[in-house]
Image 1 (cartoon, rainbow, N blue to C red):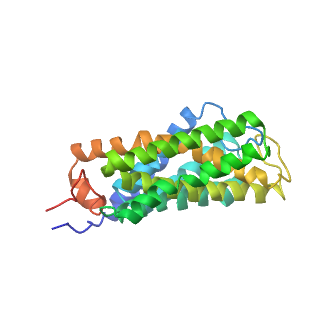
Image 2: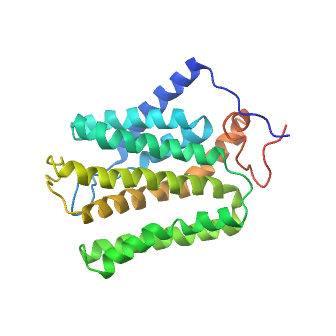
Length: 262
C-alpha cells in the first residue's frame, strides 16, 4: 500500500528553503556565463534551474518555490540590481514555475494514454512558436532557426522517453509545464515592465510584443535541457542513496515501473 506523504517539520522546512535559495543564487551566478537573450537582452542563461526543481520534487512544492523566489531575488540584486523588476517578474515567475513542477510531479500516477499524449504534445507549443518566428521572419533568421532546432530536439527526446523510460515521464511532464508557466510570466512580465521602465542589461524600453515570445522561448529552451537530461537521473540517484525521501516527497510518483510501496 502506498504510504501517505510525511509532513516536514517547520525547522527542517526553513533549513531546506534556506539551502535551496543559497544554492540557487550561488550556482546560478557561477554558471550563467554572462549570456543573455539575443536581440532583447535581460534574461540570462540559467542552468541552475535544476536546484529548485530538485528541492520541489524531493521535498515539497513550497520548499522549491519559496527557495527559488528568494534565490532569484538575491542573484538579481547581484547581476542587475533592479529590485522592482525582480519582485514583479523574477520572483513570481520562479515561485509559480517551481511550485508547479513539484505539485504536478507529486500528483503523477502511472500514465494513461491521455497523460502520455499531453506529456508529448506540450512540447509542440515552443516548437510551433519558434517555427512561426522563423517562417514569418519576425526576428533574426539565425536566432529563430536555433530556437526551432532546439525545440525540435526537445520534442524528439520527450517522445523517445515516453516510449522507453516511463519512470522519467512524470518528472519531464511536470518540468515542461512548470517551466512554461515561469517562462510565460517572464516573457509577458518583461514586455509589460518595458512599457514603463528601461530594462537593465540591454536598455530596452517599449519592447514590441514579439519580444515576449523571444524571452519565453529563450528562457524555456535554454533551461529545459537541464531539467530533461540532468534532473531525472539526479532525482533517482538521490532516492537510491536516501530511499526515505521517496515516501516523504515522491510517494505519488512512479519509482521505476512501480509506485513506492510499504
